[in-house]
Image 1 (cartoon, rainbow, N blue to C red):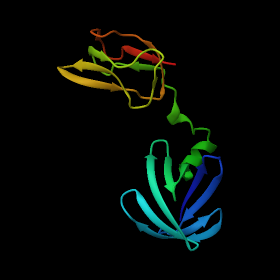
Image 2 (image 1 turned 120 degrees about the horizontal axis):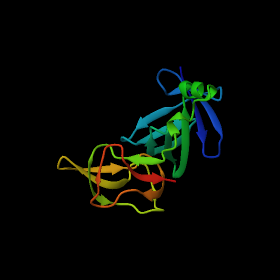
Image 3 (image 1 turned 30 degrees about the vertical axis):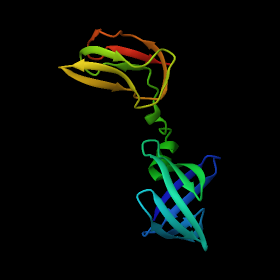
Length: 170
């Protein structure tokens, strides 16, 4: 049996254990069974306790273990934890993946072609921050974290060395 702990937006916790076929199991130790039909990659039709549910997966953030779904038109956000996440939490090691990034360093020597952000600007993980030319190739340097730009340590046209600080986050 696969066990998961699911936490909703309102911090309500559900302990879910699925049987091998994943169409039955327990939710908070109460048995359930589902009739599931997959409509497409992100849409499912479920029948549970003689009630019909249309479920659409809106967004799946694997790294953060979050899922955003729409059930019969209502949107929900859930965090999912398995036995390994619970073990890391019990050992006090549950926040290692969310280490604060304060500096962005050059991954290689190159020339700063463009700076796409400003001091004080909020950025999301994966947003383009600047373009660095190295060996006649343009490399888009993306944000490794969500944050706010505190300081830009280089200017357009600057030559930078590997591991040189390009910008700082608050």
